[in-house]
Image (cartoon, rainbow, N blue to C red):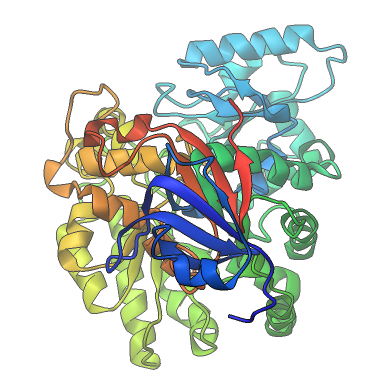
Length: 561
Ligand SMILES: [Zn+2]
């Protein structure tokens, strides 16, 4: 290191978990600018301290430091579209203006809240927009007749947590421009053929959003959403994330500009990888997409970078639109294959695969995971490729043999482990049935097969918080929402494996393992500051460890109480 390097900052801690298996523990870390110079003890750092001016900071001497958590699958910019809406979801959530919004526990609670909102409207023609509905937790879907009972004059529009279903009343159907004889994919009907007010999956949902764009995405809301969720990241200990739907909401360029403005600010606490949504790339840029991506990669910084490409293979797990193998759904749900026909998947991905892009394929159902594996096998047959990191996103319902096949094909899995706590009891009677509901998020099988995996929250598109230590707690204990039932105990993993899944393995999943995910000389100084040691506490208390804040590129960000 050069002699005229500036002053070193040395933090001491009760213990530092480095996530470098060769040198797993330390008590002091030396930082220069945004990079780690050395990790060890005050004693071992001496060769650096002898050669460079330095300052020892013992603010964390009673705390635990570890690599900043990485949630490799979020949608923070997207939630800008939710900020102007009323919240009707079943858990507390970050909502409008950063406040915590109270949950609606039942469908009747939701209908009561809607009645209340409509009664307080000054202008009865002003549409009422809500988000956060959960057909499983709220014990069934909404429909046009129910919403007409709330109001048959004020347009009402309710979107599920993940935007896979939108429910509307008659005035809203009129506003969207759907007539009784409209025949389009995803527009729902009652058994007698009348419109039921549903818009299901991407093309129908896009239609249902079209007349509301000015209300849904006012200028500045995307930027505001990124800033707002940065606070949620600090309180979760998260220092890096990947947005898995770049281009999906307001367009690639507008979303890039929002991120470039906010994320590249000197003291912004979060690093973001933007993963373009393949259909957005194709629709918005056509053949210019290759030049566009190249241009964006040339503008990448250590804070903001493009990464990979994302596809959808099926619908939503909580909204019960995943694609299932036999025996399918308990009731009449059928799942959704999304817009790209499965048989066209290989051809659609091939141009990206041949150019070396990382592929992320969303798969919730076991039928979809079979398709994902066939697709990966097909791509490898067309063009063999090493270290391809083809990642199945969510990997929600699977079987143990799929994990071995994924290992054989060299793929990876980014798993929503939170579902194993929040949804199994619910889905054993709604949608998926006991076997599949119990074995949601099979991390144990992935570990046995030797597949590299990470844990994500999909924040805030599904009904779970973004708290990586809670994700780890779920992965280790698999305790369902009643806090008594252990679901599929053979799918539990060790604390060490769970911590890897929210740090170094998560970094690898988004191509950031060279500079993030562990505390080693030369990497970026991104850390989570914890009140207790995840390797010392009873594994049953992992989720209760207080996150005091984060360090991003050497800058401390305290969590808001
Ligand atoms: Zn997602």
